[in-house]
Length: 517
Image (cartoon, rainbow, N blue to C red; front, top):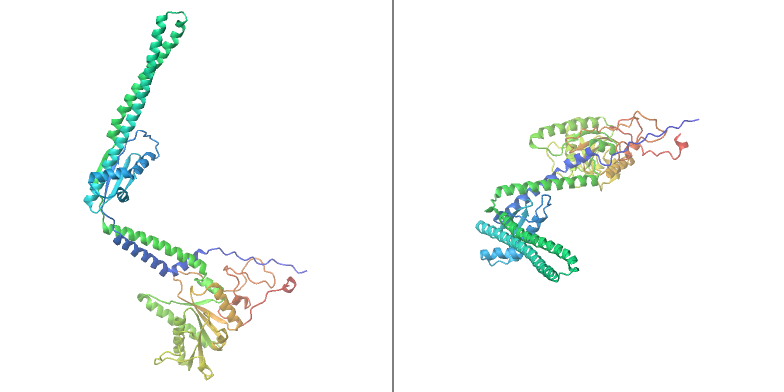
């Protein structure tokens, strides 16, 4: 009996790889840095264009009869709402002798409750003097209106108490009359009602005294509230510094632009799904990253870039010399760099014999360029038929969208892929690996152009069986990059380094358990 083994479980990939996301955001630094710069300039420009008018402030202490220690600020909010009324605005304008309408004037000032009893009034004007005068008139109009309302409230309360007292006095007079009449009768039956009359007279006398006292207290408390409502901070102009305003607005614009740029870059990176790291590109193409080539460099790093290009040329020259057939350099998003490396490689191989560069690049043809002394011979597809078999060929082509896949075997029997990081999507990298496998063009290796300088991942693809649970016979190795098994990885056997692949068709999985055994 054949013992069945469980298939090796695939390692679940995270929904969002933080390392990949950070690398993709770093590659889009042009986007978020441009938005940050735009926000900086926009904030500074707004500060220069939208210069605030001269303003003045005044602080008013407001006393309330209903003040409580646990007041949540309802009374001061009511005062702020009363400040924005046409009555107070009209009183302030009449004191200033201004012809401005109260409705228009209300748009030029605002009130703010600092505490439960302190209110700040901010008024704008054409000049600082006018703003200060407006603030003073508005504060005085509010204080006068508040004092008037306090006095009217106190007078109304005192009047209500005195009216009630007068009604009690009228009733007391009627009770006294009843007592006098009962005393003149001197009847035995009248003596029984005398006690109730005397009790009623005592009650009315007490209530009349209470109303007198409450009316006096209502009037006595008003002066304290009137004295407590006053202007505690005289109107003064608010200083305005244009450089400080420009700096603050520019900093705010910079922060908003940077946040927007980072958000757009992060969302765009997740949606686009374009691999950037060596590990991902090697896994999806099924070939190891054998070299890196900076696409652009700062002036102080040009020497390092030139040395890296020379090392790449020497490495490719050794690969071409050890290859039995012609080698093609296929680009994906880096046609200019691939053409330049092909010319350098042809110059380096010129000492071994005649070298011809077979040009298959779309859009940037090498065959139409002006030759320079010492450059190799460059021919296009039409001139490839007349080449001698003694001449070594170096093909240059493209695997970008729109490429002619049937022309790839004509460029070379083996290929070196020049892939720009972050250019091709996962689906297109799989398509490139699948088409190269179908055309029986093995990939020698991948040259990563414009790599992430902080990328520390391993770009080597190894298909050897890792230690762990035994796999079922005929089962495919599980992918560990979350993107599925690459078609190029399915096209070869296990236990080989992916720097030199055999031209084998894509493997077909078993149709049943019996076939797998």
